[in-house]
Length: 224
Length: 224
Image (tube, rainbow over all chains, first blue to last red; front, side, top):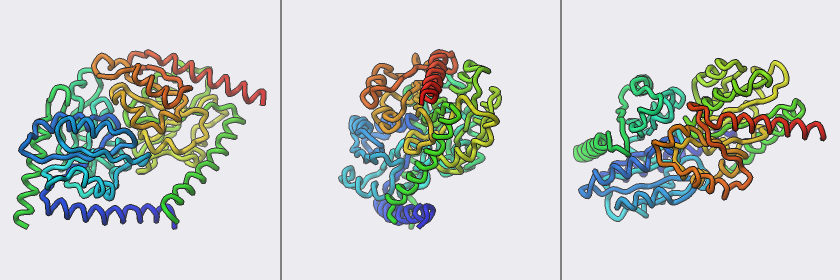
């Protein structure tokens, strides 16, 4: 068996598990967001800022992928939501079977929203479907405005891109309009939001996106 | 053949190619640095700042790994050194055979220093030996001081860690001493430098590290 064949087999096994997760999330009316970014782009900080605003009206949980440490799950539990850490022990992405396994730790009842924070990596997580409704790419303004061109895989597949750390814009060279243009070329339908977990700017817009996508999913399930 | 066996076979093939590269670099007295970091940590910016200081006395070249675009090689050629782009077309790391192939594009004569800028990824490049003398990890102060604990693989293997974007320290929460402690736990021998390609702080210290390592390698080869 060649390397390419092994890769095909791994992806096919993942697709099967992801399809079963997607059916389960459809049945439960759970909106699932798969957050993908470089290390340190601010995935956990965005969720820390958004969770209190999304409020007690929604049942929210988070699954946190990391190579090592329980830090991120701890940070989100401190915001009052169930959160489980998935430690990959060196692996560079989450896969659907890890999500299946970890769900039991956060799902007391049917969830409204499940946030999956993937391993910090702009490349490998892109190929692995986790049964999500939406891949959300995060890009911090400190990483440079050339990143959509350099990592086209994620920016063409993400239904939304969240630009983070906008409070640092006065201190770095980052052309927001150039990034919008570059993302539009790759993915004309993608939503792009400019946010700062420090100042709170744009966090409400992210919450609105979550609420809208949840309402659309519920409406689609109701009419199916 | 299982996935684990395929991975073993891939790594073994890479080891053989890396050993042959290492012998070639030893014979030529070329110091090779393999730069590994998240996307946007400032690998190219560090080299842009360092190359003019290392000066015309040294024959320097760079190999630039990226998923897409020739941007980085162009930026370094503008600094007057030969630089070749290695496009991985989606793959998340460089391997030794790609280095072997690309060397012909930058090696007119024996090189003193070869910088290899790996694909922006803190995980996958860690396992692939490129025949280098030193893995250099970069961590920008905007990524957070928790990263050595979250990505122990690279920080335990890197002989040097370059903290970048120190000019942004007044605007972010980043505890330099905590990072030093965390790296020391993983790798007591590692050198850690604090730098800014914008202000130039610490760039000379990085150049000194390069000069010292080159002198040590030449001395070791001479007495062998």
